Amino acid sequence: MKRETLDEYKRTGRYVHTAMYLRKSREEQGMNTEETLRKHHALLDAYAEKVGLEIGPEDIFQEVVSGESLFSRPKMLSLLEAVSNGRYEAVLCIDMQRLGRGGMYDQGLILDTFKFSETLIITPERLYDLTKELDEQAAEMETFLSRGEYRLITKRLRRGLMQVIDNGAYTSNPPYGYERCYVNKLPTLKIIPEEAEIVRQIFQMYADGNGCTIIERAINALGAHGRRGSKFNRNTIRLILGNPVYIGKIRWDKTSTVKTGVGSSRQKKVVYNKSEQWRIIDGRHPPIISQELWDAVQKQRDKKYFYVGSNRVASPLAGLVRCSKCGRLMNMMGQGNGIPYLLCPTPGCCAGAKFEFVEQAVLRQLVDLSKDLEIRVSNQVVPDTSHLEQMLAKAKDQLPRIEERRNRLYSLLEDGTYSRAVFSDRMQVLTQEEENLNTAISSLENEIHVAQSRNEEKQLSQLESVLERYQSASIPGKKELLHSVISEILYTKEKKTKPADFHLDITLRDFF
Image (cartoon, rainbow, N blue to C red; front, side):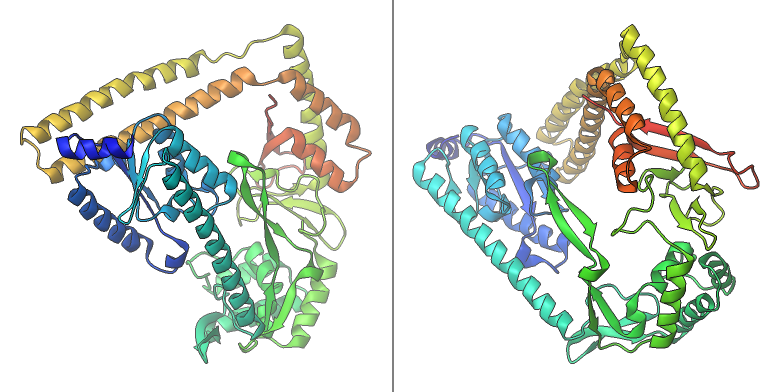
């Protein structure tokens, strides 16, 4: 739509199909998201009524989860798809920077989508017709300046946070044993006496030679529980024993956030830094345990247990094996006799097994899977997707019926049968049904595509390569090899069964 066309429509009273996009900005962080978006919605509603734009409930794209990258904003992606398909002639938003404040790639994609579809961008301050050179330049300048402003705000926030931390302030969620308080306007921690006593018992019991499982049972027997009412488990005990906050310290830079991939595959990933990269700072809060007790516990932990840490790979199966009952990742633990076990972190769940037995079982199953794949490849077996295709056809048959129901709703509104409030409620229900149906259709189409595109020859080749190279590889190398062919392993073992009496369900990765 051109700027002139909009003016003509206003004179003739012709309906302009308009969408509304709502998103909270960086400057509004800390404010209630729902309240902020509600105020923006009311402001844009008033503006739309003033200039004669009609926006239905299904035309509102409200971004609740916002991110820097375009591909972390699902509602924005849905809006761009609708705009590129010609569904809207204009999009109404609070200001230009709500649409895009990410990198140059994101900004270019957004502006190009609006330009090539000839969709207007309308804000209470200005209208942008990107087919006009002046408007296009103004939009590009707006997004460029907002990107620079975003970087400046982020840098200031980071610098301010580090200054606060260097002064001994505690800015994270309070750990067990403490609650948040403020001293000279700086956030710090105050001891909760009853919780602190539990912490002291945990450290003392461990220093006396008790393991995490024994401590877990003893603490739970006392009726103690975590902040959300959950019982203590081995992992909770382990995290408490390794947290220097209990000797009055603050640990920072334990993790870093890195960005991987480009375009739709771009994502943020949290990685654990090596312990020598951590920053240990003297905090303003009082310690719960003494330095002597802390040192004794750390010495005991170093010789008694090892875990799959971030700075060393202790298990080739790390991140692959999940308990079939609770769904949590299995932990590898090595006891004083040096024999590593694979254990479920949930008390009373699947029984553990020697790591050696599980690793051997995984390799045996991979050999069997490679033999099955070899037979399928040699016989050129075509995957059967008929059941999925039938489900897809039934789902697509529902789309015209939803459109018929939408038309009936508009008719009932026009003849006065439905009030605007009733119409809005019914339309929201219908829109949600349509979204759920489209999600199901996309999921089925993806499953069919995956099944029909799966390259079993490539899968077999990679599997054979893993089996050939596995025994001679280092532990990190073995982990990398297994992750290259395995998506997930479900582990099942009942209590009081033979050491090797467990079951594994291995899901291989797809190759295309």
